[in-house]
Image (cartoon, rainbow over all chains, first blue to last red; front, side, top):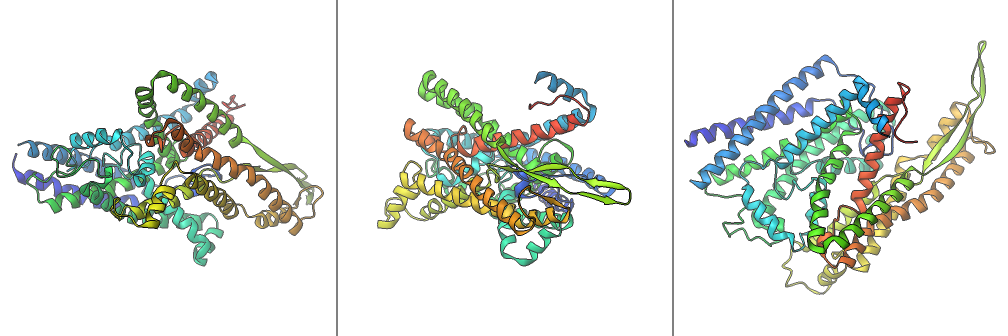
Length: 84
Length: 447
């Protein structure tokens, strides 16, 4: 397989990784910190998600799927390249 | 019990939440087994097999436990929620030190949201650091404590002969793992938001539970049925005891005075403040064990064959989980951190002030400072057995492998942190499902 293919995947993976990180950071945090994590405080999540949040979810899932595909593709390519 | 399960599935919105949680857990486990691009899966498996018999380095064992074995195989979600936990611990401790954070915490909902946002930023910063650290450890072979040398082509975790420049492979690896940490964080938040239970703890729960069958089986393989079944019985007893103590609480009665507003009377009810025996959960254990990793981390910088006097002492005592000094230090640290954490999370003066504001009082105690003193007194007395219990359960695995005479069981998943987390998270999640069932008048799981 041509090496250009691998470079395309690498570029895609880098871009999608950075985008994904930014998109995740754009979400409103929902965790209540340490005390709610292991039993302790009472967490109430009364706030519903807004329209903006829903769209953000959609984009995140989309980028996530691309990211995932790139990982699998690049992993397979590297494996094949190593054997050859 | 079973009828409660079916009724949980008959409630449409609850069913949706449970199925959503299961789906996210599936995604998480998938990412935890998927190797990052550039990591050779077969070589990693060779390494894991080679180290199975010896003792795996101390620094990574707890981390590996929390990531469900994903860390050692350098998968996409290798870091798991560890950076998030570290970030929350750091911010929690900083609230005591930095006045601005303290102010935010007192602000209530909006301030808390801001702190959470800081935690998220810090998590990704830590993720970059940790992923580069682990990639570096894997390259030098220290991830498996030198048991699989990297110049042997059978063991090379990150192979070089791929056609891509090596620095590019490493950069992509670090980037992927950092983004993976972000995704794990998001998955956890999705569970908190739309599923059942607290997302982060559900994910930790999954990672630990995922390792139980294989760990149990390896004990059976090396020790035979006798020891295996004895351990199973012991584990059941431990779990029962842990559930018993986790549920235990002291109820301080509170009476609310009747108030006339217009023609209506308000209040006049009597309730109670529940003070749990183990008010702090497993947080102290996590604090203590991360502190006890420092000596081991320190020793990693030196050649194990050329240690001077005090370094050797550290190696034989503080870095060796079967030594009495180690166990005692661990135990004392846990007791200290239990008191420390309870004092951070429960503020008697604040509770007493709130009670006074709404006309509540503990029968026989004056409101205000006497109530605060009373609460403080009860809290410090009830925390003593709580801290002993946490300490005892946590050092249990250390006794286990003195008994089994094998260092492999350092992070034996049936004792210590693992059981505490699993029981704690399990109880919390079931309680949440139950409270949702109660809204529809069904019988719950716990009676």
